[in-house]
Image 1 (cartoon, chains in turn yellow, cyan):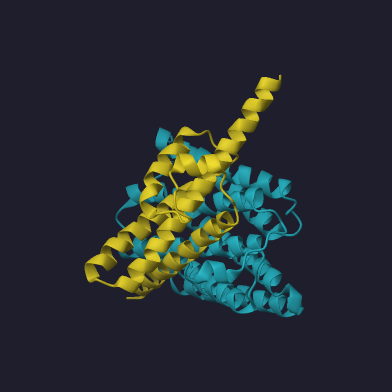
Image 2 (tube, helix red, strand yellow):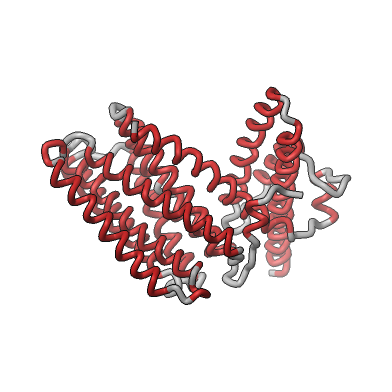
Length: 135
Length: 232
């Protein structure tokens, strides 16, 4: 009985801590202004990012060499995105519109964070290439 | 003799711990977060000890079993010191340092007392899953303490990004560990799985700490409201 209770409580706190941790990683990205070129590459036409653009952005990030250890953040956000997608499916099935609206906003935040990671990787690689061209 | 996968995981764990230490020193957090450095050094010592026992006695030996679970229990207690360090950072502005130190001493004494009582009354069960039960209880106390700290941070509107990320990553780790130990306690006959699972999950803290000290500058502010409230 006791291990089962500890397992259930730990699972709930794990979920809450992980969501808050990932949100703290995403919050830092919200301050970043994307360059016009990255917006064009990402296909952002509106002011907000949409969740369905996330998988494509992840593929683009994979193509770009890593910028000093941001891979951890990208993986954490990707895991959070998967959890949200799963929750979205469940809430759509249960027909809870208020929850689905919030989850869709969160999915957009994940997409924006991925776009920021891509933007930084592009800028970093440009700097490296410029330095190499200078030598 | 270690199989290649176990050896690869062991090497990855040691590497992440070393990288995390380097990131902390580079991020000038050595003195400010001394208990984190101490914890990582303890982890490294434990990994090296585990490796020596694995080489000499093998994975299925009693020596390795005892060393793994009891060194984990000691590491969990040292994790409490990390938690107290985080408590003192959060409450530093309130001048509550001496109360936190007293509280830390009380919790440590309480944990040691309960652990001693459990060992004294369970000497006939030491070869069974007593060590797993002890680990599960120690991590669960960690979950409660971390949750209380996070609750206090949200009420006090703590906005230091580094402290926020350190507390949250600690919360993820202790919750994950408490849950895993509870499952291990419920279904003990899956040694093949736990052999890889525990070392892999132990990489979470060094990796997240390395990220925090590498990527989050010391003065960065992040409102807890942004982490808690739904996005707008």
